[in-house]
Image: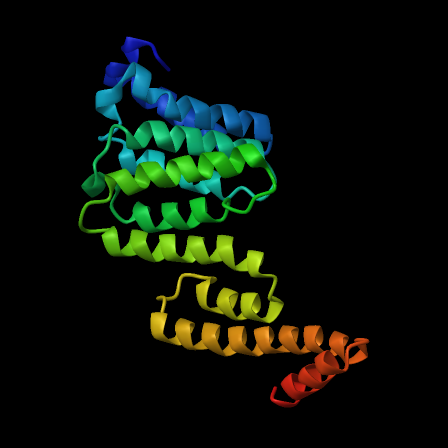
Length: 219
């Protein structure tokens, strides 16, 4: 794919056709190599990337959603990163939304390397974003941040409520999200406080038992 001959249409067209065909192969290794080949087009014919951008993005975004092979997903992320360096925001078009959503699904992947690739690729997209997709990117970044941070609070009901707002492609409604967060956060924190308080009912100090009972009664 780094051969300058690919700059000639008579050579490039059949090669792209073969790689597109192999990207549907049931063998994940064949699929992975096809994706790698498409990404390496930037070495042999970088000026052709923009011309074939839609063709490339359709195949690479589909590879990002492969449910069986993390290798295919990782290879696709590397290929997308190469391709994006040859494009501008306007060149990505409607693929931007699909791309950000697919990348986001790997943020909490068990594979450390895949998580790293997803954050690097998200950063590349952020650098490309100027005007048209700024709102979309901000929305996706907000979703990603919540998904990453909320689990650390250890509040299951809060996490469930937040996931209901963030999962899927529906427009994010900040006001409703804020109301639900406050409602569940207050309820769960109060419950945790109560559980901690009743442990002091059996204290050997009468003053502590008294204060604990009073605090529990104000719950």
